Image (cartoon, rainbow, N blue to C red; front, top):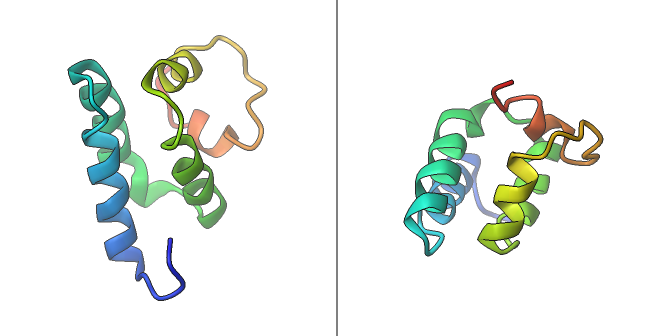
Length: 83
């Protein structure tokens, strides 16, 4: 994120990046999650999400479906995942 990017543009960018991953499955799962939850995330969670979106699709999906509950600094994102 650039220093002058406003929060609305930032959220739109994150939604776009999440929904255009490269595989249809990742686009649907990750894109839907970000679209439904981006506005609920704190600043720290948004920074973590930006980092998470730099990962390969396989790594993100492994994280999202992991049974472990110790994903610091991803806790803010993980708490929004369905049980």
